[in-house]
Length: 109
Length: 146
Image (cartoon, rainbow over all chains, first blue to last red):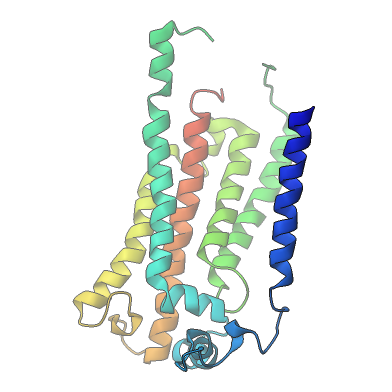
């Protein structure tokens, strides 16, 4: 009983922590938010401004997200594909020998 | 464990739905330049279409849609299309995955990048579809009869 109450207390604590963190986030579409600025705090250009200004001109693609994923950050996407593919390969290695082990154990279902 | 039996209703429903899901998957891949979507989402939809047939009709009929043996080569092909596109651009003198170096005649640099993005999206779709179908096949191997 005490343990269960402790669990709920921990859960409520984490929920409160998350809610407190959410309060600090800028509003959706807020132009003054740091991520929507044209320049960084140190004065350099941000990549987001470059993407929005140049995506259509450089790749003739209206969907900026596709240009960012497929062109500007294509090495990152290559990594994602390799991760998915590796997961498939690992599944082959893990599950191919499963039935043989069953047979050695006696083969009963 | 419950005994499995064939249901014509399930089979008919799956057969009616699967081509449309596959068509929608292709649409999501090839229309990713203009609307939300792309290789990952489209590949997942293609896999959903194949898996629907796998679940509804058993492995024997559904291997007519996509054979068990072909999924691994398909995943390899998908990753290879992506990597090969980047490598080809690099071998021809530009940077890795810089599509402006692709040897497609008659296209301006902007449309070369457009085409390059399309090619790699197809590669991503193939790899994701193959991986998802592969995982299902391996998990159901020997447990789904008929």
